[in-house]
Image 1 (cartoon, rainbow, N blue to C red):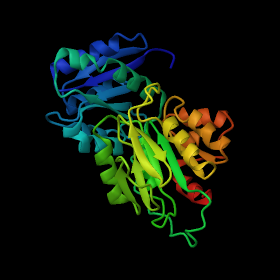
Image 2: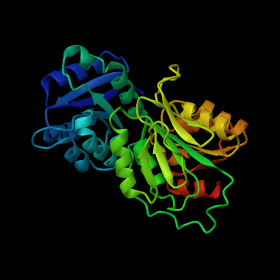
Image 3: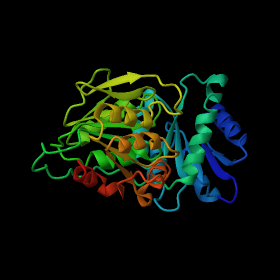
Image 4: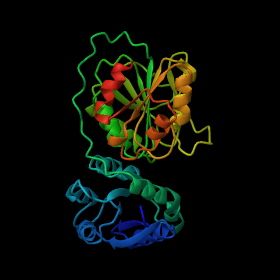
Length: 340
């Protein structure tokens, strides 16, 4: 962008509006151009101010955050970052992502000053990432691919998937399209706030032909099962027995769970019998892990730029020459099956 990112702050709490405005205005790359106290005022201000990004509370009078997202047109709309409470609003937070929000930032339940200001780094980063991305389309539940005719013949023993900004929508498109007799397990890392992975896994389990579970210590990675890493904890693969292991270490990665940590552990456990998939997201988490998979003899697929909300993680993999194929998200399930 040629100038600062123009942000509209929407929240029915005067204190929350004050804190979010101060936090964002302190960054020279961001300009807060207005505030709105409810959803109806938000829609008026969007039309009047044409912001690049909207930070959106979900529970508001007159028109809630979901109503705002439904009312926004799909073309030439600002990118939306939801600033939401965690567990109590996890279901509507996920619905906001389905309706086109780019990212979720977890608002502390305790509205004390020090806790709200703890949002600073996460909120600024979410706004910066949203500003460079395209608004995602509403996540669609795809009809699963037809059952495989020879499901036992796969060379691959595990599919590992990583995603960040725009990831909930992309993962929904990919995972709901996989066939019900997929002969290998799938392990997934998604950068999302704590408290959202269990309801996300539960919702996917309802929509997918495969079983979907949030990761638990010792959970078997068995054919027909998709395991979603728990937010705040790394997911790794252990052999023999191909089971999930959860750990806060290593502490070095900027994300927990980390795509790199999952991918590297899969390559160490299974060598060349791993297929990696890197979807939309900012940064390069997944680059080192993809290199480990390729070096071990496995393969990596990267989402094509044309369908990414943010072409960061897939770009890093593609530019390093590690992507066997670059595939639009609508065709990714077929590409996974083709490369088993």
